[in-house]
Picture (cartoon, rainbow, N blue to C red):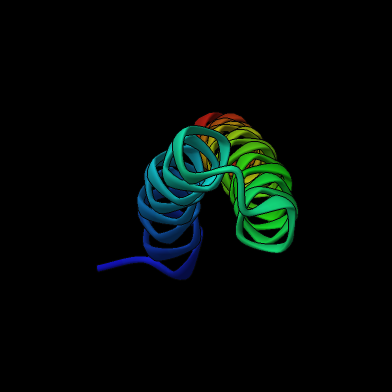
Amino acid sequence: MKDDLKREIKGKVDNIKGRVKEAIGSLSGNKRTQAEGTAERVAGSANEKIGEVEGKVDRAFERDSDRSVDRSVGVHEEADDE
């Protein structure tokens, strides 16, 4: 599995775990647990977004490199025609 996808999935899991911990802290009146849950949720959300962006950047570079290969093939074909 690609690193960006792993990071995105881990971010989603941490986000969910944080939400659960946050809710438990809120229901029990434990402000420390609630704060820890909030921190986990925010960190998970950030990692999820970073993973998404990394994936988009990787795909953009893959498309760009594919276009470069296509262009270089076209140049060689034109040279062969002459």
